[in-house]
Structures are given as structure tokens and as C-alpha cells.
Length: 102
Image (cartoon, rainbow, N blue to C red; front, side):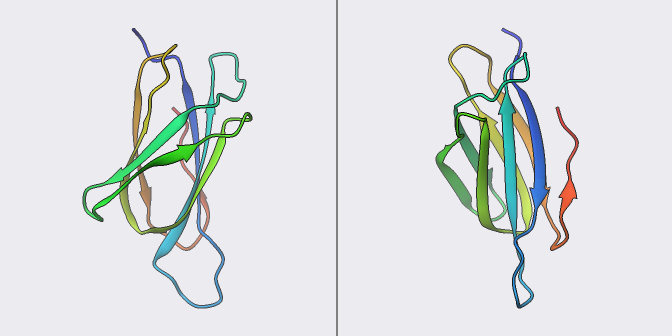
């Protein structure tokens, strides 16, 4: 089954008074019609030994992961009505930046 979920990723860093090596990841998961999809999201980084499966999007399809150490992560989304989606993303800067949508 082809993947029908669209994943728009916006990578932003948290504003802090002191310098930090952490960032913030904001995800928006949408269905093929562009509507927000409520689903579970896994965030994995082998380099940071980080694995979190307790993220759930709101009805609007948005979820925010805060205070992530800089590094390469894999965003995994599985929805029973659709195929699985896995997207690599880098959290690497204290300056907000937009990541390409897929």
C-alpha cells in the first residue's frame, strides 16, 4: 500500500537565555486532502540513543517535541488506514529553519 500521509515538518529551536545544544521539532501530519490527522509519532536517534513513542498529534495534526539534542532523527508515523512513513530530519541549529515537506 502506498503511503498516503503527507508530512510537513518544521524544525524550530527553542529560545533560551543561554546557549543550548537543543532544539525543537514541530510536525504536522495531514491526510491526502490536507486535513490534520490524529496519529502516534515515534522519534528515534541512534546517535543520541533517543527513542520516544509517546508523541500523539492533536486533531489538527500538530505535535511538538522540545529540548531535543542536536543530531539526526528518524520520524516514524504509522496509521492503520495508510502505509507507514519514515522521514529523516536534522536538528542542528539554534536558528529556526524550514525543512522540506514530503
